Image 1: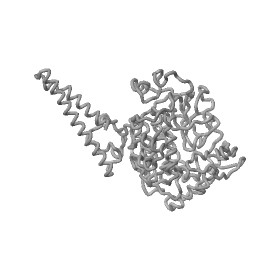
Image 2: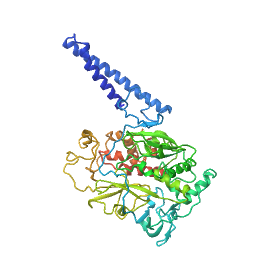
Image 3: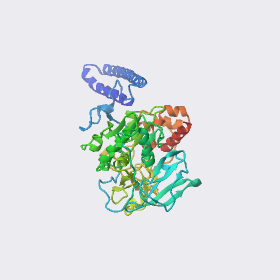
Length: 546
């Protein structure tokens, strides 16, 4: 509606400037009177067009012929007039251009090269990384035990068939406990040369779905899968309506997945073949259609057994939740699975090589690093080991993941299970007087007052962890809708969660969201509300009701 209004205003201004050419003979009073009548008539026409435009969009949504509010419109939006040019390599069909969002440009982009030295000595698996797991899972190993990569570590007593396995071989040096004797982590001191549990994978062409599922459950491959809504490990009895993989990450300092998949193309394709047997629907691949001269890796563009869709636009265009919303939205009762590219390759190696290969290429980035590059390591690597001798100073925050949705870690902790990125930024405990009001220094922001990138092009910022304010009244600003490219009203949803209105939460689309989808909204929030925490609380409330 707003973009349509801009179009009408531009039309009015154009006609207003051209009207003197049509009325050069009129007297001054007649000219003013006629001009006012013309402007009033244009405003009335504009209001009628806006009302009609919104009615068309509403009817399109009700009839099911439109997934988003911008698919059908009487008026061309301003965004469509300046629409990003589709890259030459992108297919004509299945191209989604997103205009909402925001790219946060930070210093410390990882270079596409591997660290020559160093690496993680210990690896850990955190039961808390798996949503819905019992606080005290059944641990199958003891301190001092020798394990191979792929050996069982623990299982959830509520779902004993799903096995969580060792990412590396070595000695179990700790089974750490938290509050009320919950299991906090299982830590392994890795061997210099890894040993793997031998696995005999079923032949994909001849096995039944039940045989395939049982193998994945026992081998640890099942834990590569996650399910929306709720981001839980799916139940073995469930069948998803579709499976999604995003082949690019648009978050700040994110790994380049074209670089990550290089050399492991066969593993990726074999993983896709496995996934195609787990659903009666499509395996959807989200391809990078943002402006650029370089075509994505052929591992993605020429992948088989999948349905491809190109996405362009600012972050969060690479989020799998956004891609699900625009391709195959989640309705009540639907279950959709999703994976990352490196999880797909782990599945592929189970069938290509008969082993649980948890190898990960981790992007280590941030302005506080001497060298920003990639580490070739394994799932659950030690934060301190990967960052050893690579910090410019000690006044930093370690983040497993990106700056928007990652988790703060200590040096003696390990990466989370599904993360393939480490970010290091300056610790923000130096407060600025009136920092919320005065543009004292450039900083990442949606406001052009602070974000010099709007004036000088693609400027990269040196960030810190300051929030430049504290939690305030939760007021309606319209900021969230500008950065979330989904047909959802996030502010209304957040307030429905706070009052625990279950029907409204479902109606406002809570099942389509995960924390990473609202991370940019939290960054933009004037009220400084913890939107990701609020959303997770709401998702847990809904999960308990089902």
